[in-house]
Length: 88
Image (tube, rainbow, N blue to C red; front, side, top):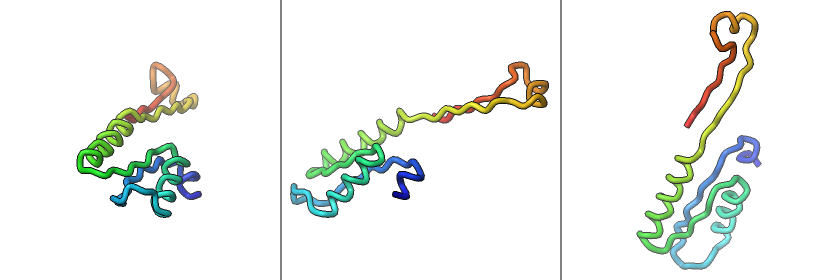
């Protein structure tokens, strides 16, 4: 619930090496699914590295754009009359 309200994305990596989903794995998967993240259950070192690479790739492609309309005072201060910000 708190993650939903905070609008965060949760990525989870299980440390369970049995190859079956235990109750904790199901909770991790639910957190990931509900927040738009991903759940990984790597069984080998290569799968673990691939999971981290996928997370890195996902995070690199996220961005945030915002727009803030100006006040008349801002209009005089800038030639455009509006400001915007971009985080990548």
